[in-house]
Length: 193
Image 1 (cartoon, rainbow, N blue to C red):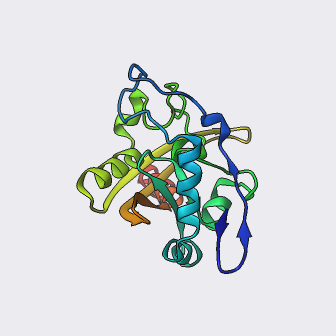
Image 2: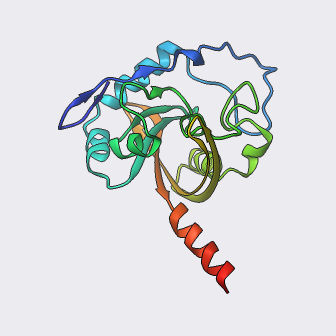
């Protein structure tokens, strides 16, 4: 559950992530491991009970998610749900950002988002990994191609990550600014010249 000052939202847990990971799992970039179901539920609970996280999710004017060290989504704000076109009961916590956004590369490897060959140039996973490694904020551009039942779409996202400790567990604040319209306008202006 994600608690906000206005209401309580219940999310589904991403049970499809119940995969046992071994040392020989293939990854081309980021670590493939995910939290176990029990650990993920504890992480989600800790984040949902934290008043600072609750305040951020309720007040930040933009898209924000809270991730664990394994890049899995623990909480999101309403604006991010709207951007994804999801209702609170459809979003599955425990997914990684590319999986939630339906990135075409999210399933290039069985380990999911961040582990495919294309992921080595993904601004989102690079920002997350840099924040974890340096324990400092990072900012990158992420160009993402989505593939949904409604069709494909190119997104140009500005990603800012910042590490935070929540009840002894290290998390990442994952801020997203959709710059797609600005990028498309700049491209049209360039074509006109």
